[in-house]
Amino acid sequence: MHTLNIIGAGRVGQTLARLWHAHSVFQIGAVCNRSIGSAQAAVDFIQAGTAFDVDALSLLPAADVWLLACPDDQLQACCTDLSKHGAFNQDSIVFHCSGALTAHEVLQSAKNCGAQIASAHPIKSFANPDSAVQGFTGTFCGTEGDAAALAVLESAFAAIGGHCFTIKPESKTLYHAASVMACNYLVALQEVSIQAFTQAGVAREQAMAILQPIVSDTVNNVFSMGTQAALTGPIARGDAAVVEKQVAALKGWRMDYAQMYQQLGQVTLTLAEPCGISDQTARRLADILGRED
Image 1 (tube, rainbow, N blue to C red):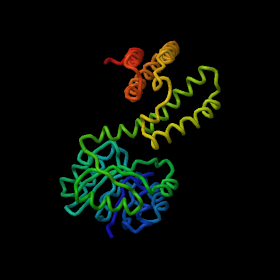
Image 2: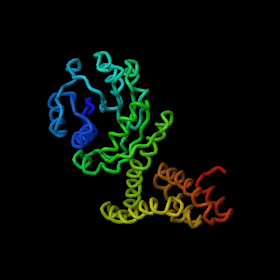
Image 3: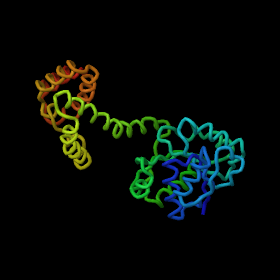
Image 4: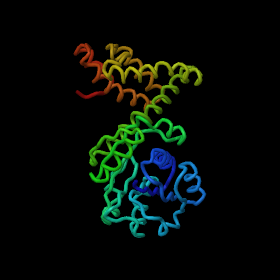
């Protein structure tokens, strides 16, 4: 069984380590956090490993695999420090779980020591590690890096129910932006909608109650029918007069929200055009939405 050291065992590191320990995928070695108290709490959650703090890098035991799970802006410095302390060699596998950074962007110092490097990004919320452990099965994980490292990591993720897929390293920023738009910006869009409701005199709690079923139904339709078939509303039915009135109302309230409406409306129109909107209506909608054809 491969040994695993974890540097920066926060919510992601704790979740993965506990699952790998429970499924006998890795033997957990060092669990190193900023403070010994935090590291011990992580060990207690993982139910395996030995706690170290960052002042003890030179004392960390050897390991086959290293997970650097510290914040993105600390990954490169962390890897460099470990390299200087002789942590890595030609038999090492070093990886991180950032969705925004490639392995070669931040783990090059390990590569220079002969290690195989990779990144594996689980597309999942880890806000609550207990819940993440229970619900990890079925999680998709975007991977890139050296083939030897990926062979070990993809097997490790598969053993705990993960589904790995490869991404182009040069396009990883776009890959991460896709998840941000789908999840983080969905939340932001609901906030804009709630603000519009409250501007119209609807209490925030009532707005939430109104949105819950229609947003849930829409999301379900997207994944059961596809984006084009799931599309409804004034643009989908070619109701240019309604769209024009809504743009004007938004401009009278919040110009930035009006611009957001128009930009999203342009994407909506592109989806709707093949579904029976006349050329004349499409041109009028494009003009209202500020799309340059």
